[in-house]
Each structure stands twice: as structure tokens, then as C-alpha cells.
Length: 380
Image (cartoon, rainbow, N blue to C red; front, top):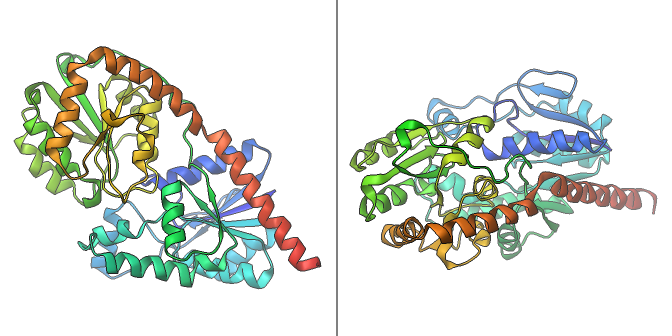
């Protein structure tokens, strides 16, 4: 197949959707497909570059702080890509994809979409994340202006598929994990010398309000073992300054960095426990990567998150937003080393279910179904 992936940001892997798009493109090519990308940046043999969309300074700062950039909807370049394609897959519900969708409809190019942007990702950035009305407005806006014009939508989890059904989305929903690289597998290494006597707890994710780094910091402060716990936050985002300020209360100074994939492998190999305190998640690939690497996760049991699906039992769940509940689970896993070791093996085995190759095969089937339906409409 000739597949066009339309996504605002592709070159800089600073957010989960971009990372997933790059992995999908690579694996789709390995499956024998031809793939072109339409996204911000320069052009090359495999990518059609468009200009960055400009915003007023306040809006620009908010978008940039999320590790994102939005693309200018260049009609000429989108049309060029669509003329080449057998199918177009739109990964973000913004201006580039809106224009691309209209062109695909006019040109009769089969098209599918992915749902990667949870409304809460936007509203929490604006300080109104808990507003049911605002989140519903965005779900409805996305539905009416974009998603209900598709027959097929990729949903990374059952959770987000159920949300779309509740909000009146009419397309066939394909629940397919974004998938992880098989390089995330059980691996243990010696801790760096400075951490030899520390219990390392790692969390990975954008430094934004809905990820609830504050809950994890508070939980460590009230843990019975706070003096021996070393927190590591892997990520970047708008709440970095607030998190650094809050972390001053920790017994051991917080380590906060952005890690590339190789560095992430190393970090996970010498960490002792993984915590995912986020209230809002469509899937949480970072959590899958962590437990596939042999770390027991502790996950916020939030009704606005898909991540609780990964918990093998209640020992890996805590009451969302409750530091005392999280501290209790942290203390349990510190005190029960043998149980932790047994669970590490179980979680690592579970991680194999999410290998990228299997996920991409399912995405290919969705594309084929969309193409076949389009051909039926044309020739019937």
C-alpha cells in the first residue's frame, strides 16, 4: 500500500503521538508498504514538509510548552501527497488534518483517523481540566467538525473507544495499541554508584498538570522509606518549574531529565519501581515500556484514564489523587522484595502482548478495509 500519515509534528520526538507515528511509519515500511509523511519541517524522499502555523505569543508558549508544534494546512502539498496515496491516515484533529480531510473527500482518496488528543490534554493546559462542560464541548467539536466524517477511527485503548461511543462518534472504532518496540524487554543492570543504596522510583511523561507529579512527590514524602527513595522524572513540559519547586521537600534531590530511547532503556534497567500517577491517559505507552522492561507499575485508578487496564492486581493500583493511598502501595513493594521480583516477570511477559509488529498488522487491516469500502462506493 501507499500510505500517507498526516501529523503536525514528526521530526522532533517530544510527545507520545509523534513517537508512535515514527514507530508506525518504520514498521509499516518493514511490512513492505510505502509511507510518506506530511508534517512540519523540511522535505525529503519520505516526508513532505510544510510550514509551522504561527500563533500569538501566549498561545505559542502554551503549545511549545507541551512539546508540540502545529502545521500550516498547505493545500498544494496535501494534494500532492493524496494524489500519490492509496490511503491517508490523519493523526491529529487540527488545521492540517482538517484541510487534508476535505481534499481526500473531494478526490475520493480512502481515509482513516486516529484519536490521540484527549480533550483533557487541552483543558488541563488551560487550567480548566476538571470542567465537564469544557471537555464535553471539545469532544463534541472534534466529533462534528472532524471524526464523524470518517468511517474508521483508530483508538489506542478500549477506554477511549468507550468515551467516543458515549459522545456519539459513529465510525467503526478499531481498538489497537500504539505498540512498543520489542527492545523494551526484561533487563536488569547495576545501579550507578551514587544510587547504590537508594530505592529508585521512576515515572515517565509530559510535565503537565493532569500527570499528577505532585501526588507522587507527596506520597514519597509520607512514605516510611522517604529517606532512601530516589525519584526520577523522565519528561519535559509546562509544569517543570512548579515540579522542581515542589520537589524541594524531598529527602533526596529529584532527578528530572528528558531521556532518548537508549537512555530510557538504561534508566528502566536499574530502576526498582514505576509509578504512573496521571489522572488522564488515552493509553500510556510509557507505562507499557516500563513494565515490559521488568518494572512493577503502580497506577492511578482514574476513571479518566486507560492505564488501570494494565494492572495485574490491586497491588498495582492506588486511589487517583490520593498520596496516602500511593504511599501505602510504594511501602508494600519496598517491603515485599520477593513478591516484586515475581510480579516483574509477570509484567514483563504481559508487555509482549503490545509489541509493535502485531499492532501494525491490525492497522494495515483497518487501511485495507477502508480502501475496499471506498472502492465499493465508487464502483457499486
